[in-house]
Amino acid sequence: MVMWMEQMSMDGRVRKDWYVDHSSGECIVWGHDPRPYPTIVNDTVNIDQGVVFGGMLTAWRMPERESVSVAALQNYAGDPDSPLKRWEQRRFAPPNLRKFKEGFTVQTGSRLDVSIQGEVARTAIDTFSHFTVPLEELVYIPPTMSPPPVASSVEGYLEHPRDAFHYYRSQGVTRMVAEKKHMGSRAILLLFRDQEAAKQRVGRAMLGNIVTRTGRSFFDPTTEQNVLTRLHADLTADGYFERHQTEFVLLDAEIVPWNLKARELIASQYAHVAEASLMDRGTVLDKLREAEAAGRDVSEWLQETEVKLANATTFRDVFQNYCWDVKELGDIRIAPFHTLAHRTGTFWDQTHEWHMEQNREFARMSSFMMETEFRVITSEADEAEVIRWWDEMTAAGHEGIVIKPETFRTWNGNKMIQPAIKVRGRAYLHIIYGMDYLAPENLSRLSKRKTSKKERHALMESALGMEGVERFVRREPVERVHECVLATLALESEKVDPRL
Image (cartoon, one colour):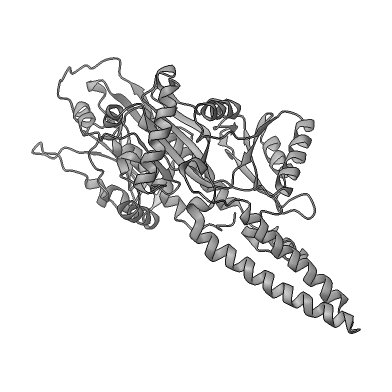
C-alpha cells in the first residue's frame, strides 16, 4: 500500500521528522518540506525537491521503489531565502540520528539501493559515537573484497587466479587488471591544498586526515601531522594541486609494514602460535626419530610430523615477511591504488590502468609513496602470464593479487558485477585458515565455504562508497555523505566469515 501525505499541518506549522517513528508498514510518499534530494527513512520517501525554487521534480516508481528526478529549468520563485538555500546553509549541521537508528535506505547511482536494518544501524552509530574521526571528515569507507566465488578448479589450491578469470569472462568482461596485493593496512588519505580549502569542505582548518577502513585515525595525532606535512610539501612542490586544478585529493591506499597497525594482533595470534607449534612439533619429531633409530616402525607418524613441522615453519615465515622495524617516518610506505576524487569530480569511469598510472605519479612525487605492480589481461596468454607471476610472487612470500574488471562499475545487463576479487597465495593462506589447512580433509571442507554474503556486501559497500564520494564532491550536506559511510559501517558489523 502506498499513501500520499503532506507535511504541512492545518495551522501552517511543519512537524519535524515525524517519519522517524513510522512503523505501520505502509509506504508513505510525502512532500511540502523541500529537500535537495529524496529522503528515504522507515518506508517513507520525501519527493519534494523544490522544483519551484530551482531544485528538481521527482517521481516515485512503484513497485520498483525508486525515484526519478529532473532538474528545474530555473528558480521560478526567485526567493532569496528559499528552503533549498537554507538547506545549503545548514550543510555542516549534525544529522538527526533518530532517522537512522531504526533502519534506513540509501539510494545510490549504481542501480543498487541499500537498506540497513535497525540493529546493525545502531551498532554503527555506536562506533561513530566512540571511535571514528568526526563525521564531517569521514568521506569514504572502502568496500570489502571477496575471494573467487567457486571452489578452486586447480587441485591442491583453495584460491587460484584461473577461477577469478572464469568469473569475469562468464560476466562478459574482456579486459581485466591484476594488481599486486600489499600485505599492510588499508587507509584512506584526504589531502587538502590548504587549510582554507579544508574549512570549505569539512568545516575546519586542517591539512587532511588518514583513516582506517573502520573510520578511525590511522596514526596518533603527532605522527599523522608529520606524515601529512611531508605529503603536502611533496605534492605542493610538484605543483599537484595546481596541475589538476583541485583543492583536495582523496586516495584509497595500503600502508606498510603490516605490523605498523597490527603489532598486537601479530604478537597474540601469530608469533606465540608459531613459537609454540615449532617447539611442540620439533620435540615430537626428535622423539620419533629416536624411536625410529631404536628400531620401531614409526615411519607414517614421522612423515606426518615432518609435514606438520614444515607447515609451522611456513606459518612463521609468512607473517614475518610483512613486518619490519619502523624507526622513523621514512620506514613507512604508502601505496595509493585508487585516486578517488578531486574537486572536479570522481574517477569511477577511469580504467584501473589509469589509476595505476596515477599511483606511479605519486611515487615519483613523494618518497612516502610506492608503486604497485600490475598486469593488463586481454587474452589467454595474458592469463597464463599472470598465473606465472602470481605463482612466483606468492612462493616468495607475498600475499597475492587483486583481479578487477577494467573500471569500477561494470554491469552484466542490469546487474553490477564484483568490483574486485582477491586471490591469495597458498603460503599466505596458512595464516588465515591455519597452518595445516592444506591437509586433504581440511582443504576438502574449506572448498565448500560460502562466499555469497561476502559478495553481496562487496557490491553494496562499493555502491555506497562511490555514492558518498560523489555527494562529497557535489558539496552536499554532511548528513547525505554520512548516511553512506554509516551504512557501510553497518554492513561491516554484520556477521560474515572473517577469513574470506
